[in-house]
Image (tube, protein in one colour):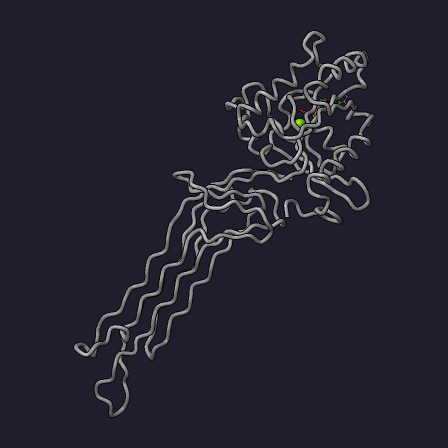
Length: 347
Ligand SMILES: Nc1nc2c(ncn2[C@@H]2O[C@H](COP(=O)(O)OP(=O)(O)OP(=O)(O)O)[C@@H](O)[C@H]2O)c(=O)[nH]1
Ligand SMILES: [Mg+2]
């Protein structure tokens, strides 16, 4: 899945149609009254959330969205037609803000949720509205109101149950590819993954949950180092964090270091993140010479976070119990009623 998590767009609502100046013309009625119709309202621009799309990538090709203008009023009191609305579909989890000042317009979470981001201009009134005792033949009608032009920022924040975090090269992408159908690139160097990916985990026949591979966390990320805050914002919306640690890269005299680096970054970005439920998972226990290290690390980590596991994402050791454990935590947190047979995150 191609994942683009930010887009800038311009939206423009339709202008209202003009009111019409017109008079009745009938045989034998020399001076008919005004009968100019009203202009139609301009179309709105509406942003709507849908689970049919999963990224903002299409907005790198199309950035300008314009609704139709309202038709002008015509004689014989005929009102102009309303302009068609422009509907912009975005993935669920898209936050819409105003580019200039960052003001939040709407966080579109649920299927079909929508917001009018530029309202169509009012149609102008036809001249018949302006007739009075003093002026029975008004040669004046109102112009349609102009549409609104707005610059907007769209930001996709992942909606997932479990977010995999950890230092580069910990094996996050390997793990998501073993647990779900997601297939991010895997390689033995840091920052292989530059974009988060999402996968669906089939825990049992009828229970599924969504897992996300969240890349880019390093020391200083909370203050913008590396991919930094760009991806930390995705962590905000996951229910549970799976904190993955490469046990083969641990130094025996500082077993807590990787765990603490990541937790400091979470806290620096948003203190609430460090309150989130974490499942700590030691990875790469298939590597020779890691078993004593793993045992010591587990003992050191438990006082900080009692929920510690050991796996090999590569060979599959420990994956089944871990999957079941994650499923039961998600189940607990959601009351068990979401995502059965198919899932609708956060509904
Ligand atoms: N021996 C062993 N190697 C593993 C294991 N899991 C991952 N690796 C290797 O570790 C390297 C990094 O794995 P990735 O899954 O790309 O790690 P990542 O955390 O996604 O890395 P970044 O995207 O760069 O942050 C790859 O060479 C993997 O093959 C494991 O359980 N055992
Ligand atoms: Mg990766």
